[in-house]
Amino acid sequence: MSARTKARKRALDLLYAADVRHTPVTELLEAEAKRAAGEPDRQASWLYAREIVDGVVDHSVEIDDLIAENATGWTIQRMPAVDRALLRLAVWEIVYNPEVPTAVAIDEAVEAAKSLSTDDSASFVHGVLAAVARATGANHAPTAGSPSSED
Image (cartoon, rainbow, N blue to C red; front, side):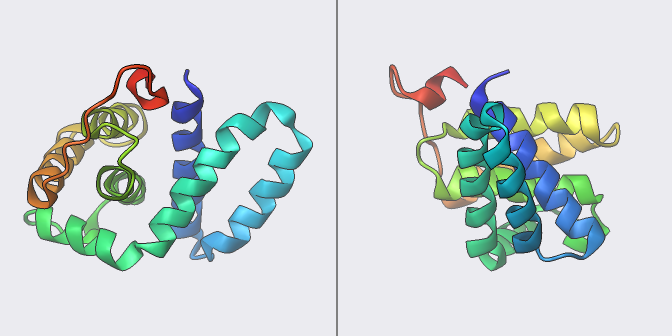
């Protein structure tokens, strides 16, 4: 598992936990930062996980608007919590992180949905993210030798 995949999983865990616990994600970030500081193996993935979570928090209104506009027939509140967290994370990567190829962001979210959510979640997540990518014109392509081309 690549460092970025691990970071996405950590970010997903934080976003999901904050959502279901109704806890500010900043509180969870502080606790995770302390754990990461004490475990050098976590450092590599922690920096990108923090970037993801900070980005999702900074752009939460825009991200939720994009999800709502592209999730035909679903409100954000009606979605399973893990799907909400996956979509928020992936929309941030698609729209706000040009270093990550759009296809990688979508694929990582779909794979996570297959293992962590309902039977229908993978196709739902794929559909929403593909619609977001089309709506925003996002099409980040990998560049040779870039870290994200190896995700």
